[in-house]
Length: 210
Ligand SMILES: Cc1cc2nc3c(=O)[nH]c(=O)nc-3n(C[C@H](O)[C@H](O)[C@H](O)COP(=O)(O)OP(=O)(O)OC[C@H]3O[C@@H](n4cnc5c(N)ncnc54)[C@H](O)[C@@H]3O)c2cc1C
Image 1 (cartoon, rainbow, N blue to C red):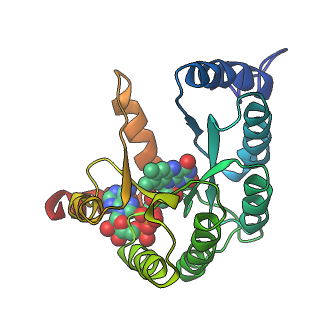
Image 2 (cartoon, protein in one colour):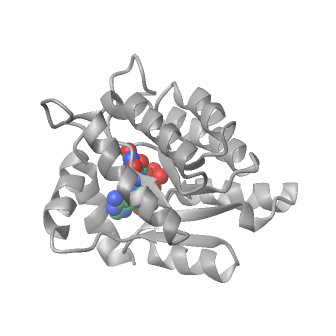
């Protein structure tokens, strides 16, 4: 969206102008824009942009927080206190150990803690994961706490764990599928794979599974 473009009036200001036009359009059509989260060098700028756009168009914009970052527990409180919708994911980038949990088990544990916090915050949230254990923990939490299923939705990537997607939808959970589309879908797809080479193996495994 232009955050990395240099020169006067470019960078974060340019990104905010472009994204602001999209959010304005969403507001006019009673829709919603989710701003993806990239690597940690963009976290603060993305959150600030979301906060300013939410102040202009309340409820029409939200962003993504990543459970692998140490700062995310504070960011959850920061955003829910303003009523800003969060998509919670584990995080897709390689981050240094000074700012992010290096061990997957710690990321998963933090995800579960934060997932319960955002789902009970009173602000509708998206739980973006294909992790069956975590989804099972959420199912159990809903059954035990009486949390309405409409307080949150699960979110998954198009084509991944379609069996699980169908099962959750049949059980009455909200399920949103993330679909890249348009003429530039191929470079987008390659970029996603390049961000995390493990995804190539995931993809191969799931090609046969789903
Ligand atoms: C809707 C959505 C939006 C996202 N937006 C962002 C974002 O803005 N910023 C960001 O940093 N990350 C984003 N992510 C990616 C996220 O951070 C994780 O990297 C990714 O979802 C894998 O984590 P997981 O929770 O599925 O658990 P994992 O433990 O990584 O995976 C659990 C299981 O799910 C399957 N799986 C997971 N991912 C894939 C895949 N790509 N291909 C094939 N199989 C897979 C595998 O079977 C795996 O064993 C998003 C993910 C989703 C679903």
